[in-house]
Image (cartoon, rainbow, N blue to C red; front, side):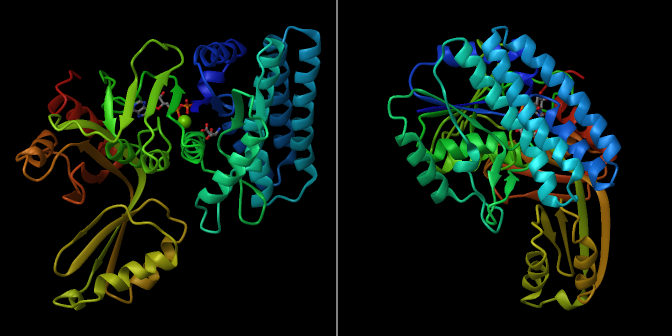
Amino acid sequence: MKVLKFGGTSLGSPERMQNVADLITKESGKKIVVLSAVSGTTNTLVSIAAALSKENSEEAGNIIHQLYGSYQAYCKNLLPQADSLKEGLEIVEAHFTVLRSMLETPYSADVEKEILAQGELLSTKLFVTYLAQEGIKATLLPALEFMRIDEENEPDTLYIRERLQHLLDGFAEQDLFVTQGYICLNSKKGIDNLQRGGSDYTASLVGEAVSASEIQIWTDIDGMHNNDPRIVKHTYPIPTLSFDEAAELAYFGAKILHPSSIRPAQHANIPVKLLNTMKPEAAGTTITASVDDARQFTAVAAKDGITAIKVKSSRMLLAYGFLRKVFEIFEKYKTPIDLITTSEVAVSLTIDNQTHLKSIKEELEDFGDVEVHTDHSIICVVGNMPFTKVGMLKKVLDAIDDIPIRMVSYGGSKYNISLLIDSEYKTETLTRLNEKIFGQSR
Ligand code: ADP
Ligand code: ASP
Ligand code: MG
């Protein structure tokens, strides 16, 4: 079994969706196709929810109306045959009836999640209708019947495996399955999601659950690039990555992969390929357990919206148990720490979730002086850099020697050097690293 995931841009127009159908029929053997919402849809659904949260149902209604028009047009172009078109328009009607009903429902987080789920429900159902029109037999596996997160918002992998296997057993003769990325149920049986970009995570979790032979992530670029192509000119695709390298890049901002999407594939040792729907012949990137020992620097990524917190306390001097007490506060507020550096009398750390920042700061103040700096970015340089490969940290620091660096983290793993800078220096930092450590022109 292979898992093939197609992102929103790969479905952005009826022609693109038809192209996806061509690509999957070229792939032999059993496969599960995971689809995102059509590009732009989830952002639009977010804006509908935002309008409703401000009790502006008129604005929400207008956005729903516009989106409805675009889906009707999409259907008409995708499904020229009368029967299929009728079916497609019925699907659209059903989901827009749900959206319209939200205009009358008191707003809550559950309402928002139900709104956000409509994108993937629409794209998969329309895709299966298109396949049927073309005489391609496919079975829709509703993600809400097997994808579930637990109380900690972590995927319930045992449940996913059992449920998915059970569903697949019901269609032993079938080769082609289609399911929704991103959406899931939560521990209260409510509709939920795996956070933005979560279809990659679905693909990896599905791959793990069925012990797939390969997971393909099809998108609008020819694989993982050495630097962020949205920010830096002259980036290039990386043919191979190790799971650890890919996981670091995904976690620290390489948007091509959801931050958590590599772990399930790594856990089950399933190769992940990043491929380009617009250029299917391109090699893309293959992610496996093997590490390219000869390579030094592999890629760099940046993660924004980082807050640095420094706690300075003379009580830390020669004391044990101090760090534990600090960490317990972050644990209490379920706020993960990304980077950490310490000195004898101070500890600096970073978080990307500011929800509980005020309470965290208040509790930390019991230990000493607390400084908070927002609007920072983590620059994560990934490569194969065990400490015995001398000079790698120096090369990174030399490349950006006039950029103020608030924190440096090196030695935590042999695959990564992380730097914390004010976000205003992000573009310059990424550009300099591209020039100086990857030898690319500006
Ligand atoms: P999809 O809709 O297929 O999930 P995404 O927009 O989520 O696509 O991810 C693909 C985009 O990720 C690319 O178009 C590119 O702009 C962006 N991106 C950011 N960093 C990288 C990187 N290091 N390599 C490749 N793409 C990257
Ligand atoms: N449609 C969702 C989003 O836009 C999930 C995804 O595309 O992976 O975030
Ligand atoms: Mg994505």
